[in-house]
Length: 545
Image 1: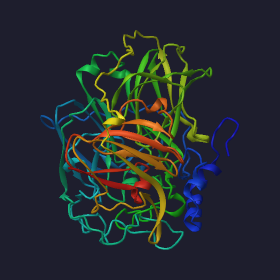
Image 2: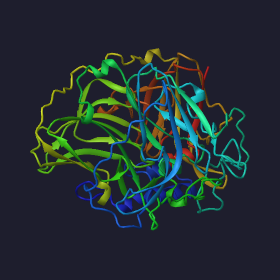
Image 3: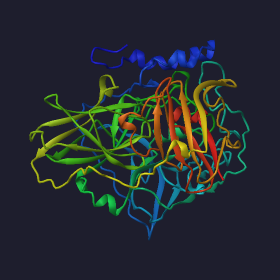
Image 4: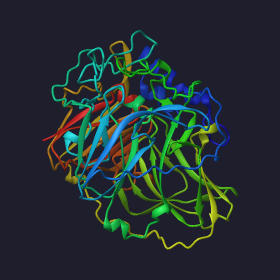
C-alpha cells in the first residue's frame, strides 16, 4: 500500500517476488497479476551493519583517467578493500581500484582504445553503454577476457560447461534456463587482456562502461564494475552550460551490506563461477537499502549559489527512482533537463519530478542561486521509503559569480525520423516465463540464445519497434539511439525527450520507438537493463547486415 505522502511500503515492494511465483504456479496472466504493482520491481535486501546518518559523507568525484599514450587508456580490473560505509571494510571488484571506476573524457570523432587487464577471479566483458561501437568491441556477453589460469569453460565463463544453468528445484532460484551445454561459435575469447576500440563518432553524451558477462552481469555490476565515459565536442562547449567544478557526475546505485562488511547479494553461486541466478525471492530484481552516489552513502556536496550541471546515471541493478530537489523550506527546485542518454536535447525541459530507470542518464541543470548561504537542498527519491527516500544533499556555502546559462536552443543535430520512413514495424513482448526447471524473463516468449539471430536489420534502415511489458522493464538497444514515439497510444512523456538508448516500460504498457540502424554491421544486443532480468534470459540478438 501507499502511505499518505505517496511512499511505497515494504510490503508492496516485496510483493513482486511472490507475484512471480504465483504467475509461474498458476498460469495467471502476468499483466493481470502485476500491472498494478508499484514502480519498483524487485525485493529489497536489508543491511546487517549499522548505517551512517544521511548527508555526512562528502561526495567523491571519480578521478579522470589519464591516457597511457595518444588515444590509448589502460584499466586493470582488480579486487580491493574499500571503506564505503565509515569504518567498514568492503571487498569490491573494480576498474583500476575504485568504485566507480575512473572517468574517461574524450572528444567526438577522436577514436580511443582502452586496454582492459583482468586480474579478477572470473572472466569479464566490457560494454560501453551508449557507445556507437563496432561489434568486435561492443562487449558481446560471450566475448570474454579470461583471468590467468582460468580452468572453466572458455566461452561462457562457467566451470561446468554452461553459462545458462537453471535453478535446481522449485523455489530455490533460477538461472538463465536456456539449457546446459549452450555453445556460441562466434565468441571471441581473450586471455588476460583485450583492446576495446571506440571510434566515438557520436554526439557528446554521458556514457558508462560496465561488465556484460553472460548470466553474471548483475552480480558483477553490484560488486563494483561500473564507470563513466564522457564524450564532448566544441559545439556543446560553446553553449555556456555550467562547467568545471560546477559540472558533477552523479552515479546513483543502491547496495546492501552483509555482517562482515561485504556487499550482500543473493547469488546462487557466490563465487560467480558456475551456477548463475539469484534466490527465489529476488527473481524480479535485487534492491539494496543503502543509496550510494559515486560510491558514497547519502553524500553531501558544498556548492556555490549558482547553476550546476548534474550528469545523472542510474547504475542500480533494478531500483527505479523519481527524483526531486527540495530546499529546507520545502520549496522544490526545477530540474532543467538539457540532455538525455544520447546527448543534448533540442531545447531544455523543466521537471519538478523526474523518473529514472536503471541505465538511463539525464543531463540536468539546477540553480542554487535562490537558496540562502548555509541552506541545504536534498535530492530525494519519491519512490523510496525509509532510508531509500534520501539520495544526497547540496549545501550552499557561498555567493559567487555565475556566467553560465541555459540557452533556449541546445542542439540542432538531432535526427529526424518520421513514422513514414520506417521500412517495417516489429512487436516485442517483455514478460516473465518458465524455462526448464526455473523461472526466467523472456523476449517474444524466448530466452536469450547467443547462437540464434532474433532480428535481422539492414544497415541504414529505419524501423518502428513496439515494446510491450508485464512489469517494469528498462529496455536498452546497443549501438543505436532512438526516439520515443508514443506510450500506450498517447504522446511521449516530458522525460522521454531527446535521443535515448534506454526506455522505461511501465507495467502493462506498450511503448513505440523509432530508430535507424546505422554505424556498423554485425551482431548486437537489445535487452532489459534490470540486470537480474537480463541474466535470466531477457536479451535478444539483432544482426545488422
